[in-house]
Image (cartoon, rainbow, N blue to C red; front, side, top):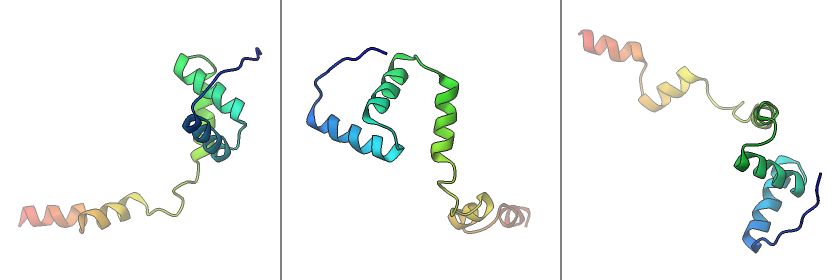
Length: 86
């Protein structure tokens, strides 16, 4: 690994700090991840696995698909088909 130093804007520093805390990684690790994604380097499979693990369970309290559909549409697909057949 090679050490380097760069200048970044204050808003960038704040976003990096917030994102690193949210992901539970160091700022340096986050910057390496950002560079890997931008430069298409790194281990894509490991990154995909990390993304899956980071988001697993995020919607555990969300309704299942049929329940969500009914809440959005107001009725089931079967109800709408019955209406068309009538």
